[in-house]
Length: 299
Image (cartoon, rainbow, N blue to C red; front, side):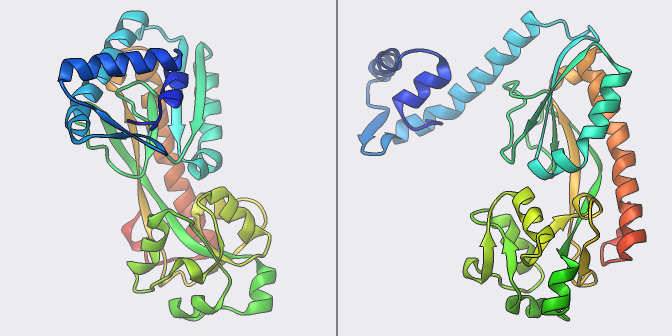
């Protein structure tokens, strides 16, 4: 159901396609009806399959947690710790913190996964995740460590050539850089009364690092996290009084971070250092770009 075809499932499971097909047929015999309809695009789950999926998913997570607890020695301060974060946050903020974590705990083997997709910590796809939303699963350990302000930025050469917008509506006459399919990027504007449509964007990409690169190349105006805007050549911030949304930053861990050992050590270290780093970024942003609508909310 996750990958949509027998061949893709076989690759993910490390078995052959006929083996997956036999397992599906055996399960369908037990259930007493078909679980998938064969369509040109692959396999489409039936209503019965949809009803059973949550139970199967819970079993998979429980089995993975049990296997991890049996195989690992979480009390040891050595071994792998997998950290995941979004592309932009992982590039702009985390590397020096991971360096300090490694220097303080030389026995750790750090694995660093950058993805805008939410990794399943209960299934142990990662041990620690940096997220912008509090997780809904009650078994996960979560701590809010601060916030990351966003802003509108452009290269000085672009501003010199195209001028400075005076209102959010003026942005529609500029070359806007924004998301392709990510609805959140459009909501940032609609929540502030500006209806930006895909056709209003001169460049569309869901990669935040690609958006930043286009801004720095002088392509146009784009939304950037403050951590990225403070790095490299100085950019011009536009309309800080009208556009300064901020994201809550959460550090999330699987239940193993409660136990003494490498997971709790890494989680506690990153929680404390990340909180200080976000405060530093906020203070530097106010110093470099001045106050904004978000400044009054504190660090």
